[in-house]
Image 1 (cartoon, rainbow, N blue to C red):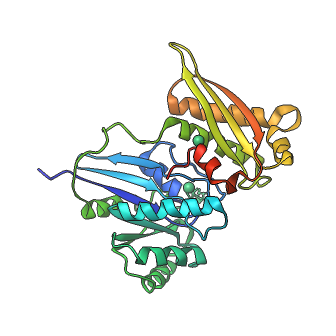
Image 2 (image 1 turned 90 degrees about the horizontal axis):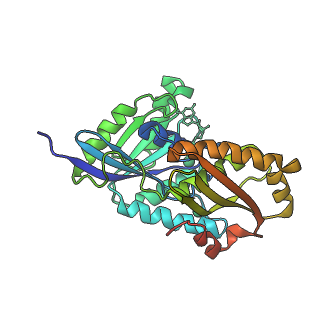
Image 3 (image 1 turned 90 degrees about the vertical axis):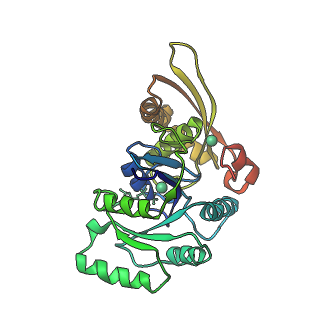
Length: 296
Ligand code: GDP
Ligand code: MG
Ligand code: K
């Protein structure tokens, strides 16, 4: 019989290359949050894939970029620590875009770590096969990769091959998580992220990254609905107006859609109580960020 292998795999890549899409495809549950906007994933989200002979624990690293404000610094620290601790690094790029400043910055970081780095070229469904070879050559000039694997996370192309390659690099190890566990994330954080996702999506571009969500309370009495109380934080009064909408219409819609997803996540009926508060400049206040659950 084969030995059981296990390990931690960090997913790294600039925003919108498809990291969350990949996680969702592989894990098959909506744990990581998908969005067209940058930086939706702001905390480590682990997805656990358990097969007969291996367990892979994926960590969805926050989008690395040159820090612009306090939250940026905070994210960088999380990312750097993550890279040191994991067994494998999966560096994902969008093969349909040329190597950007963000990629170069990540490559500089990756060169400083001893952990094996897989280059995963995502979105091959968008390019001609000839172009793929050209792109591979370009990346090969930047640093030494353990493996280079082209995939389409969206269409599920070549993902099995990638997982097989991962397994080759993992060492014998324990089953860290029970078979049926897909995430070690506190439910409250996932709930907050689901609400944030709806708010971002519905207010579309009007409030790019000024929204934070905190779950203030989550309780369940026997045989009753789960009661969730959450606050949506914005930076300005005008943004509060947008999130609430005319006659509360927007907030109602955010709540309706978030509740649907939370019910799926928890497998239980949910009563969702949403509040909107203005907290000026919340992104630049490290203490406030900590209070909201962005852990170190
Ligand atoms: P993240 O910021 O790296 O987590 O990226 P997301 O997973 O949120 O994906 C960003 C966008 O790229 C979404 O609109 C996805 O549907 C899209 N996307 C992800 N993977 C693929 C892919 O393989 N092919 C195509 N065509 N689009 C993709
Ligand atoms: Mg993401
Ligand atoms: K939170």
